[in-house]
Amino acid sequence: MSVNSTVAAGSPPKALTLAEIHRRLQSCPPIPSLKSIQGALRELLAAEQRYAGQISEVIRRDPGLTSRLLKLVNSVHYGLGHSVTSLEEAVFYVGVRQVRDLATMTPVIDDFKRITGSQRGVGEALWRNLWKHSIAVAMVTKDLMMVTAESGEDFDYVAGLVHDVGWIVFATVFPEHHSSILDQLKESSLPVRLIELDSVGCDHAHLGAMYLKAQQLGESLEFTTRYHHTPSGNTRDARLAGAVQIADQFALSIGLGHPGDPPLRSPDDWVHATGWKLLFPEGAEVNRRQALKSLEKAAQRLPGMVDCLV
Image (cartoon, rainbow, N blue to C red):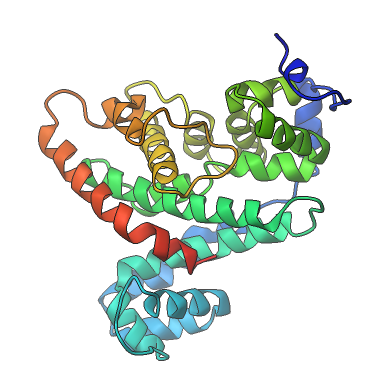
């Protein structure tokens, strides 16, 4: 049965060929921060052994990063009991690793907001939920990969951050299709991927990977984005895609999902995900227990933490 036959009568836009999708992708604005992010981090990485005052001088050059750092340190998550207005004090409490994550996240989320800012008819709450979801997935992906012997830290964080970039492309380049998908999600029990395929001609994971390829952002980022719902294989990229899959489902289980997420059959679906088996195969019991402890802590800290970052 066609997806469109399950929704109310109307004239949804026709699905496109892959050739037409590729052509229209050329009009999607770039995410410049993804190309420059490693260069932007060098100063902070180099400053890791310096005093908090020296690190704060680097942060002070970026108003967005400054604002998010102060919001984070003054959030309920840290529970300091007093207001922090000094960047030096904020760096002391938050730590260099968290500052690095903020430095990675800030320009990307700001680029996402810039790209979607011109959209009309799409609720602000939808985008806010997507930003919170993306940040949560980035944090959990990085934590999961750190449990393994293959941690790429900042790259792993970026892979989680951009995994749903296809949703932004849908709204920007295919606004009619995006609206149709959102309408169908309200009334259809079919998997999101099938609705996307029927409406556009590809799902958001494939579309996101095509966009990242067009932006020449590297095969690893393309792969993890393309297969974050269906990871398989025995490569690091496959395991990273598996970590993103787990993080994606975990974020949904703690209330940090968005309309494009497939529904969970049970709160702990992520434990049974393909990605879990890729990351923690038979014999990896120590790593598995460590990952579960990390996720238990994440469930407590993430909702409040991401809320003050968007």
